[in-house]
Amino acid sequence: MITFRTEKVTGRVTRIYAVCTELCYLVEGDDRAALIDTGSGFGSLRQVVDQLTDKPLIVLLTHGHTDHAMGCGEFMDCDKYLSHVDEYIYDLHGDDKFRHEGMALAEDGVVVTEEDYIPTIPFSSYRDLKEGDRFDLGGESIEIYELPGHTKGSVVMLLKNERMLLLGDACNGFTFMHENHSISIEHYEENLKKVKEKVAGKYDRILLSHGNGEAPLDIIDGVIGVCEDIKVGNTDDLPMEFRGKKGWIAKAMGPNGRIDGGTGNIVYSKEQIWTDGSLC
Image 1 (tube, rainbow, N blue to C red):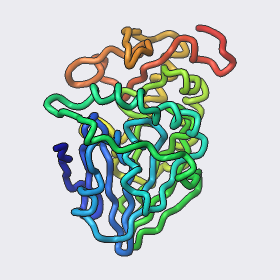
Image 2 (image 1 turned 30 degrees about the horizontal axis):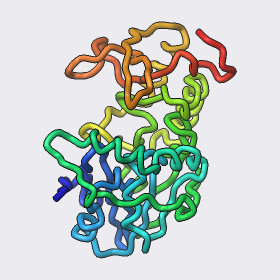
Image 3 (image 1 turned 60 degrees about the horizontal axis):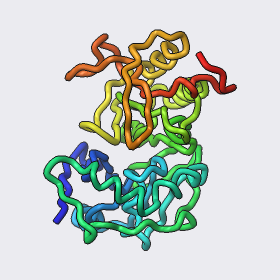
């Protein structure tokens, strides 16, 4: 049976470790709770959430990728929100064949069986999630900011009273920007600068959806810098392949992060640097 490890981030926020390296977060207010992301849909996340809270629940998804959205089948009784812009990628990532291939990505020692599989639900099950949406939980609220890049519908979430910014996969230490459904590096950099301005001064801690779940406060600036280096060719360009899609790691990595000591990184495609499609 698949188990999920949990840890308290604060009194109101619990981090949940799912089976394919992805992290989910439960945010509990005085009146209701919000589950941010539902993992790959392997194993019963619902059992874990029900043990953590008995408050009415909403589900908020950072984006439509398979490792963040596919556990929603256990939450049909809850209002579920996902940017409708991400329908183009949700349908691909929700495909049974694609998801079954993802079983191989489970962490070492975790065996995923057919009994653990949560079926994909129709995209029509989701309410639209967009910039400016605010969810009041009672004593805590979650504000939504759009950050297209990793996917066109990616959002980040500000936990206002906790003064935490959850970036999901939209900006992290190894941001995937090399897939066909990602936008150009040029456009992504513009979006990073916009969201940086909007959330400036509103947070003291950054949460991520992979790794240990934590990021330095300068992560957005660091990834903006990587975008600028990609545009001028100041990159190490280490080849990488993930699920059949090849890309280039912009900055060389060591066991403790970037070898040059910088913050953030991007896996990119040389065909997707400029918005007009021109090559470097």
